Length: 362
Ligand SMILES: [Fe+2]
Ligand SMILES: [Fe+2]
Image 1 (cartoon, protein in one colour):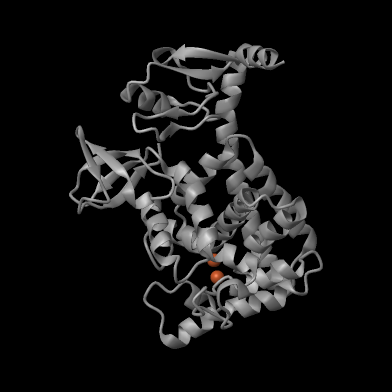
Image 2: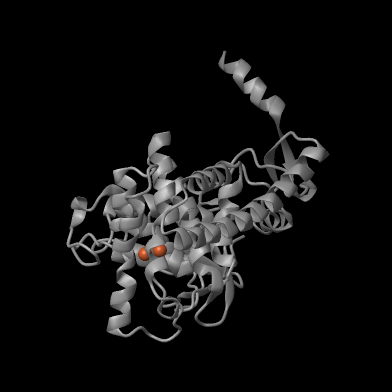
């Protein structure tokens, strides 16, 4: 029985020398670096950059899925399609906000349609890595709120999978992600898009969006209480700080605790009118330092463990101006990355050096 299964796998896979790899081929197994860290995960559709990376690491051959030439060019098309679909969904996110602003209520059909778009996009084979790259590469401050709402809903969809949520709960979490900042339609445009630091009065106006969002969301018949509560509490911190309530720890509803983490992550990796984007490594490191006070520790660990995989092997710039590659990225300790630069290995944990820019994620 076991032998039959192994034979079946062998029929679907083949070992190919790195020098003979072609863009569009799909990796059947994880490829690991000399430290045991994942260099390129199984399921990755290879492009020129990945092939060059494998070669640079001295990987002589890899296992790929047996696929025809046509299938390989289909794989390349798939990546382009993901980018297009992401852009389309972002435009629809803008429509959802403007229609809610005009009609003073959420259009249920539009919301449900949007939910399916996000779910399909996130569940598309091989899409997740591409989507995580898009969060930080599409820099469009004028449409930040719509991109951000979409990003948070995609990350919410991934989070639901990491937690093994049932379909119905996943749906609610995705919709809460899409609408977590819907209350910002009540914040004056000039305040929302102000480039300079906000005055205390203006910041108080911005903070109202959590409660305003709650008021709009609770009138929407497809949203369950857990989603509505998530929208209300997405700026609540576990130490009791944050707003609009004074809840602490597990008294903050689950969806609120999840949205708080992904909201901060996406805001930090994006370019907004308030700030320039930060390297995703730094953001993940910051999350781990902050987690004791602000975030649910367990959820933050789950987020970090799953997200670091998307950022391994990035090309980075250090604070001394040198460019290098992250060659080791331990899942539980993002701060202990090892960066290779001009043949030297720098352990970020023991050295003074810091990553100041992620040039590319692969
Ligand atoms: Fe918010
Ligand atoms: Fe947000």
